[in-house]
Image (cartoon, rainbow, N blue to C red; front, side, top):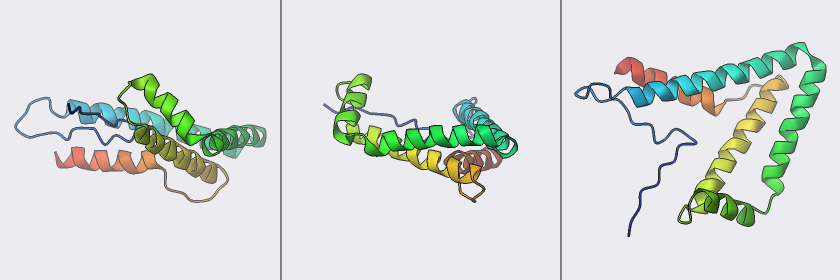
Length: 136
Protein backbone atom coordinates (compact mmCIF):
# COMPACT_ATOMS: atom_id res chain seq x y z
CA UNK A 1 0.00 0.00 0.00
CA UNK A 2 1.51 3.32 -1.10
CA UNK A 3 0.76 6.68 0.41
CA UNK A 4 1.59 10.21 -0.62
CA UNK A 5 3.15 12.46 1.98
CA UNK A 6 3.33 16.18 1.40
CA UNK A 7 6.34 18.11 2.70
CA UNK A 8 5.22 21.62 3.56
CA UNK A 9 7.95 22.95 5.85
CA UNK A 10 10.09 23.97 2.87
CA UNK A 11 7.21 24.96 0.57
CA UNK A 12 8.21 22.27 -1.93
CA UNK A 13 4.61 21.08 -1.99
CA UNK A 14 3.36 24.41 -3.37
CA UNK A 15 1.67 23.77 -6.69
CA UNK A 16 2.67 26.19 -9.45
CA UNK A 17 -0.15 27.97 -11.27
CA UNK A 18 -1.41 26.61 -14.59
CA UNK A 19 -2.55 29.00 -17.33
CA UNK A 20 -5.50 26.84 -18.30
CA UNK A 21 -6.94 26.54 -14.78
CA UNK A 22 -8.66 29.53 -13.27
CA UNK A 23 -7.77 29.95 -9.61
CA UNK A 24 -4.71 27.69 -9.84
CA UNK A 25 -2.58 30.55 -8.52
CA UNK A 26 -4.32 30.55 -5.11
CA UNK A 27 -1.98 27.98 -3.55
CA UNK A 28 1.10 29.90 -4.63
CA UNK A 29 -0.37 33.25 -3.55
CA UNK A 30 -1.08 31.82 -0.09
CA UNK A 31 2.53 30.61 0.12
CA UNK A 32 3.84 34.01 -0.98
CA UNK A 33 1.76 35.71 1.71
CA UNK A 34 3.00 33.30 4.40
CA UNK A 35 6.63 33.83 3.35
CA UNK A 36 6.14 37.61 3.18
CA UNK A 37 4.74 37.62 6.71
CA UNK A 38 7.64 35.48 7.98
CA UNK A 39 10.18 37.71 6.24
CA UNK A 40 8.66 40.83 7.82
CA UNK A 41 8.85 39.18 11.25
CA UNK A 42 12.51 38.24 10.71
CA UNK A 43 13.29 41.76 9.47
CA UNK A 44 11.57 43.19 12.56
CA UNK A 45 13.61 40.99 14.91
CA UNK A 46 16.86 41.93 13.17
CA UNK A 47 15.94 45.62 13.18
CA UNK A 48 15.08 45.58 16.91
CA UNK A 49 18.40 43.86 17.66
CA UNK A 50 20.31 46.56 15.80
CA UNK A 51 18.69 49.27 17.92
CA UNK A 52 18.59 47.56 21.33
CA UNK A 53 21.68 45.72 22.53
CA UNK A 54 19.94 44.11 25.52
CA UNK A 55 17.25 42.69 23.25
CA UNK A 56 19.97 41.51 20.85
CA UNK A 57 21.66 39.67 23.70
CA UNK A 58 18.41 37.97 24.75
CA UNK A 59 17.47 36.96 21.21
CA UNK A 60 20.93 35.55 20.48
CA UNK A 61 20.75 33.64 23.77
CA UNK A 62 17.33 32.21 22.83
CA UNK A 63 18.40 31.29 19.30
CA UNK A 64 21.56 29.65 20.65
CA UNK A 65 19.42 27.55 23.01
CA UNK A 66 17.14 26.50 20.14
CA UNK A 67 20.09 25.49 17.96
CA UNK A 68 21.71 23.71 20.89
CA UNK A 69 18.53 21.75 21.58
CA UNK A 70 18.22 20.64 17.97
CA UNK A 71 21.90 19.72 17.65
CA UNK A 72 22.26 17.92 20.99
CA UNK A 73 18.97 16.04 21.06
CA UNK A 74 18.97 12.33 20.54
CA UNK A 75 17.92 12.63 16.92
CA UNK A 76 16.60 9.10 16.62
CA UNK A 77 14.38 9.26 19.72
CA UNK A 78 13.27 12.83 19.10
CA UNK A 79 12.52 12.44 15.40
CA UNK A 80 10.70 9.16 15.99
CA UNK A 81 8.38 10.70 18.58
CA UNK A 82 7.76 13.77 16.38
CA UNK A 83 6.99 11.59 13.36
CA UNK A 84 4.62 9.42 15.41
CA UNK A 85 2.80 12.51 16.66
CA UNK A 86 2.00 13.33 13.01
CA UNK A 87 1.06 9.81 11.91
CA UNK A 88 2.13 6.25 12.61
CA UNK A 89 3.40 5.96 9.04
CA UNK A 90 5.12 9.36 8.83
CA UNK A 91 8.84 8.84 8.04
CA UNK A 92 11.22 10.26 10.63
CA UNK A 93 13.67 11.38 7.92
CA UNK A 94 11.17 14.10 6.99
CA UNK A 95 11.26 15.37 10.55
CA UNK A 96 15.07 15.27 10.44
CA UNK A 97 15.09 17.35 7.23
CA UNK A 98 12.74 19.90 8.79
CA UNK A 99 14.92 20.14 11.91
CA UNK A 100 18.03 20.67 9.77
CA UNK A 101 16.28 23.37 7.75
CA UNK A 102 15.06 25.17 10.89
CA UNK A 103 18.50 24.88 12.51
CA UNK A 104 20.21 26.31 9.42
CA UNK A 105 17.66 29.15 9.21
CA UNK A 106 18.07 29.99 12.91
CA UNK A 107 21.86 30.10 12.50
CA UNK A 108 21.49 32.36 9.44
CA UNK A 109 19.26 34.70 11.44
CA UNK A 110 21.84 34.79 14.23
CA UNK A 111 24.55 35.67 11.69
CA UNK A 112 22.37 38.43 10.28
CA UNK A 113 21.71 39.79 13.79
CA UNK A 114 25.44 39.80 14.45
CA UNK A 115 26.01 41.83 11.28
CA UNK A 116 27.34 39.07 9.03
CA UNK A 117 25.85 38.47 5.62
CA UNK A 118 23.87 35.27 5.30
CA UNK A 119 21.23 33.95 2.97
CA UNK A 120 17.90 33.21 4.59
CA UNK A 121 15.82 30.36 3.23
CA UNK A 122 12.58 32.36 3.51
CA UNK A 123 14.06 35.18 1.43
CA UNK A 124 15.25 32.77 -1.25
CA UNK A 125 11.89 30.95 -1.44
CA UNK A 126 9.99 34.24 -1.36
CA UNK A 127 12.02 35.55 -4.33
CA UNK A 128 11.50 32.29 -6.24
CA UNK A 129 7.73 32.37 -5.76
CA UNK A 130 7.39 36.04 -6.64
CA UNK A 131 9.42 35.38 -9.81
CA UNK A 132 7.18 32.45 -10.71
CA UNK A 133 4.06 34.52 -10.05
CA UNK A 134 5.34 37.31 -12.32
CA UNK A 135 5.96 34.81 -15.11
CA UNK A 136 2.44 33.42 -14.64
